[in-house]
Image (cartoon, rainbow, N blue to C red):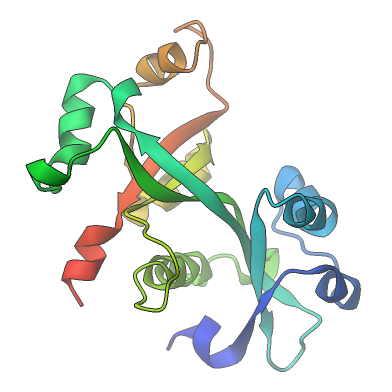
Length: 199
């Protein structure tokens, strides 16, 4: 059973919905603060658009939420072996310096639904959304700046995301940090062409 599609309603996370719903709690303070208090500002400033699934039987309860915005993968900043990996499935005549991508800026699942595979269902929904024929823009990749913590990294890896940089040292150097500095996030990507080819 796909719980989100069968038991929930998909909605934009707008000001009206936030006022009608109880506070979202995914047990991550930064994400809670964003979805409860900052998502509307991001939307009003055209920096990102947030969406959520609410329970059909209780539309004041947000099961999960996410934010997306436009982005790109700049292959010129990626080390050689990783650049080849990104370019691998793109015909040589179509290879570019930048590839269109959508950024998942935030993503969280309500604590009451942790451990029920809602996160994987949500990621499957997002992936399908961007290869839908009615999608209004070209989007080859999904990218995410994952929190550099075990839980989020394992989540994205289990959903077939890969690191854009092989090591933290490479990524730190690319972002202008000292190689020894600890990264708070890791840049990861998913190539949508693999999902499209399965349809």
